[in-house]
Amino acid sequence: MHLTQVIHKAAREKPTGIATVFKQRRTTHAQTLRRVARLAAGLAGLGVNIGDRVGILSANSDYYIESLYAVLWVGGVINPINTRWSSQEIAFSLIDCDTRVLFIDDNFIPILDGLKELCPCLETVIYCGEHSAPDDMHDFERLIATNEPIADHHRCDNDLAAILYTGGTTGQPKGVMLSHQAILMNALTTLAAARRPEINVEMHVAPLFHVGGIATLCQSALRQITQVILPHFDPKLVIQTIEQEQVNETFLVPTMLQMVLDCPDFAQHDLSSLKNVVYGAASIDETLLKQAIHAMPHTQFMQVYGMTEVAPVVTVLPAFCHTLAGQKLKKLKSAGRPTPTSEVKIVHPNTGEECKFGEFGEITVRTPSVMLGYWNKPDQTKHALQDGWLHTGDGGYLDEDGYLFVTDRLKDMIVSGGENIYSSEVENALLSHPSIQMCAVIGVPHAKWGEAVHAIIVLRDNHTLSSEEAIKHCRSLIAGYKSPRSVEFRAEFPLSAAGKILKSELRASYRNDAINH
Image (cartoon, rainbow, N blue to C red):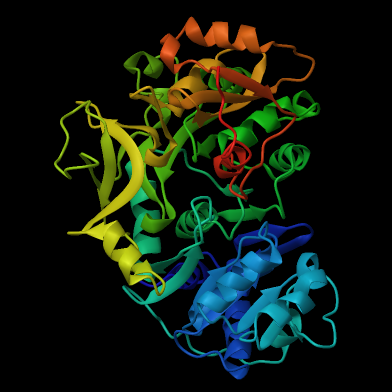
């Protein structure tokens, strides 16, 4: 299994079909194949050999996709870099896996000199922006125009394809090594896991450096459909593009979906072409789902759960569970059932013994799409991969129907007065209040109880709510000991590039301050 197979196949079977749309550019499958083969020749001429790492530091674009395939074509390994990182974090990923060649667009030219100072290993920079390349860089289009196509190296199966650095929310980033087989197998099994409507156009909103973006890219390529690429997430642009390009499917995280629905221009656009929204990173709040179903009656919703280490999907919650009839099954809070090639086992965090149905423990996964390991981190690899099972660090349980319920990251579990409290349960209770748009629940130091439940809330526009009202609402839905002891209101949350709330940043401000009430 080799990742470049998808563009060979599409060019052979659907040569004149539109492969990518970015702003005013429309590129066919046949054109994409030729451009990738020429760009790969350019990389070879710059000294990229089999196994060499090549970084991509760019916003989403068609050039990003062509760069990715060209690196794989020449036998290299992609290092897609988080565009929201600081220069120091970017430098860490470049140095850590000895990345010597870097694609860069206009957004990051201002920090390039600083990166070069931080990264002695960085030797070659390729400009993949919308203008002419600066004098000290190689030009993307010129490399394509001045090189004859070379043959695909056909790296495949367990050959290393990508090093994806984890977001760093739990500490220093780790380079997750994914093979050709892992990425392609995961895409195939995700498509097979639940019925989807036939579609012609996918819209990429999630960042392509993220494993979710790469997975969506691969799934779209397998379906030989048109991929409309947005440079970044913007609710108004999302709505306009769906109508203009007749988009049929897209991947969003729930926070993105909420912002789309709240966009003032929402009602002014015809979104009836949108048949399917795939969401992940968090379960969907019932209030948000009902709002979405009402606003987009032609659209179905499905959830995927996973992680970078499995490339990334483990379970899928099908569209039926989101319908009014399906919600009676009470599976909406779940992450769905394992994909055809994924096995999920819940183990006791202390003993490692397999848990019974309904019993909380650590989620472990066995799948052909599991990572090869963490780059240059054998001890952490050994800890994560045990007897063929990936220990995810997520806590949850399986019900008797095989549905996985992800209750928390184990590190997010709050222990207050000897009681285990799962923040997601408190967050779900808070989110049912009509004035609350977003919230995050964390454990903060407490002089008496060890930890106390603290809620951080973002209100909807033109809504008001007091701390006392929020706590009272929570107490009406869950046990008193689980309800927040303190509440804070903010205008916005710190978010990762994947749209996840960065709880590590929220906790940091409370690390040394004990609450005494």
